[in-house]
Length: 204
Image (cartoon, rainbow, N blue to C red; front, side):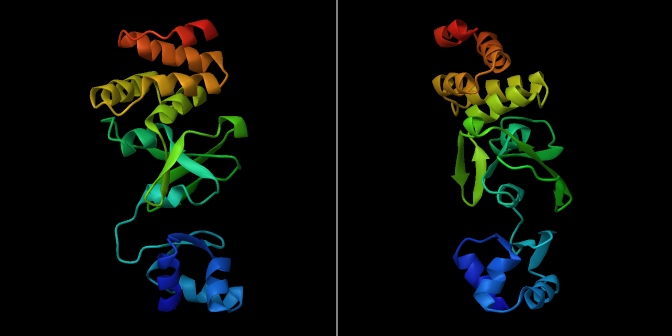
């Protein structure tokens, strides 16, 4: 069994299906399932899907963003990922093209939010985790109405202070969402810091 786990690690398969393991072992799914359930280095996410602990710390972002493909962690969880909020995280929000029921990973709540394909953009790979850019995390938050605007404003202000946000890109992303509510939200954020955007103004 250890050889299988080593093979999964070699291919960066932190999250894997029973079919992945069965293919490597060339054994029936039922047999592999029993082996996985008794292995202390493997934990079950849901039926047929597992993740490796391998004696290291658990990265919730890495696991949560690989349960459904494609998907990425966004909104408040992304704010925490970039350390632009002092608020305590309640749940990890994963944006996906598919529906999926909420799950619990290491006592942390993970929700899955389905959005349209044309609004599915603005994320990048960090290690094995897929996380929204700070610009898209702000836009997603405004579009989906969570977290509260004061939290979004805090994240925006801290991102500006640390110079980790591209305001032009933020405006681009807001316009790509094609909703006035999102554009108005970004406009409000910009005005709070005395920043003006002709493109946003024209869209409203």
